[in-house]
Length: 273
Length: 149
Ligand code: SF4
Ligand code: SF4
Image: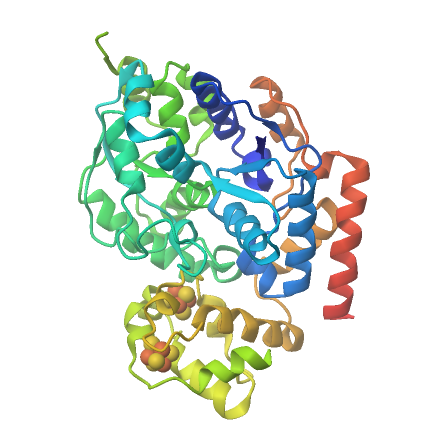
C-alpha cells in the first residue's frame, strides 16, 4: 500500500502520518510513502477554476502508485483521487476511516488496543467523507455511523450534538475566499459542541482539523469567543490506544492544547489480557 | 456551462429542498434555487453573484434534491464563469500561485520540514522533489494559462 499525504498532512500535520504508520505496523499491514506525489489537488477550489487541471494532476498522483492501493487520511485527497479512479477505472483509493471499518473491522480494532481511552468525543465526519453518494456508496449520506463506531471501539463515548452533520465551514474554498462566512458556520458548530462538554472533537480530515483548531484561535481574536476544545484526527487516538507515545502524534503542536486531554491519553484505562 | 449539466436544470420543480438543506444559506445570501433559476434563464450567473463563493460544497442540497439535479456541481461550474470574469476572492488568489509554484495549496516551510524530521518522517511531497515539482508545476501552468490567459 502507498500512503498519499496531500499538502495538509505532509506540510502541517505530520503527526497524523506518524500515527497512521504506527497503526498499520501494529496491524501487520505494509505501507510506504507515495514519493513525489503532489497536492491531490483539492477538489472544490480546483474545480472552481479548472476541471481539467484537477483531473490531470489527480491522474498523475494515481499513476504514481502503479496500481498499488492508495491510502488517504484526508477527505479532500480521498474525494479527488477516489472520484478520478471511479471515472477512469484506474486506481484503488481508500480513506483510512472506511478502510479500518470495513477491512480491519471493529472487533479486530477492539482486540488490538492496549489501553482504552474513556473520553467524551464529539465526532465530525466532514462532508466529503460521505457525500456525494454518487461516489461514496459505502455509507449513509444522512446518518453515517462509521466514525461513531470507531470511536467506541477504543473505549470512548461518541456524544450526540446539534448540527452534527453540518459542515465545519472550512470547505469549498470558503475559509480562504469568504473568511467571515467560514467563521459564522464554525461558530454555530462550536456553540453546539461546547453544550455537550466534550473532551475533544474528533475528525478524519486535516482540513477539518485546521478549521476547528486554528479557527478557534481566530474566533477568539475576532469575536472574543473562547471554547478551548482540543481537536484530533481519529488515527492519532487509535495510535495512542495501541500504545504510541502521545507526543509522537504531534497533538502538542495543535493550536488548542489541553493538558487535561494529554493526561487522559497518557493514562488511559488498561485493557486486561 | 457544460451542456449536460445545464440540461438537468430544466428538471427543477422549485420545491426549495435545496435551500432548506443549506446551512450556508442560513448565514449568507446564498440561495441555491435562485442561482439555478437565473442560470436557467440567462445561462450565466449574474454579475454580482459573489454568494457563489459562500458555498462550502457540502453536497447536502445535491444529495437531497428530489429531481436529482447536481446542484453543487453546477455551483462549481458557475464559479468558473465568475472566476474568469471577476477573478478569485480573498486569499483564494494566492492559493493558485502556491499550487503553480510549489505544487501545494499549503506549501511547507522550513519549520514544517523540521517537524517531520523530529518525527523521523521522510520529506517526499513533490514540493521538495525538483523533478516532480517541475512536472506538476508545468501541468498547473498550462491549465491556468487557458483560464486566465
Ligand atoms: S431541491 Fe432540486 S427540484 Fe427542489 S428547488 Fe432545489 S434544485 Fe429544484
Ligand atoms: S453544497 Fe453549497 S449550496 Fe449546497 S447545501 Fe452545501 S453549502 Fe449549500
